[in-house]
Length: 84
Image (cartoon, rainbow, N blue to C red):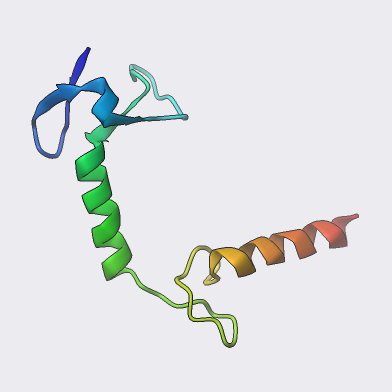
């Protein structure tokens, strides 16, 4: 049970690949990148795309809607309360 990483082009055991929840046609249920390459890509993206939360007095990294994870979740909870 081996798979080839499309980034480093090495054939590795499938346990060295993350599982994918969303399957695409002709997909085997594993990520295209090995864990090592995926982690390097995430670290690079995090370093280059540092945008601060737009909420006042919050210096956390941006998640969605220009908000950090905590403020984003809070905004979702407020929206749900308004719908009820």
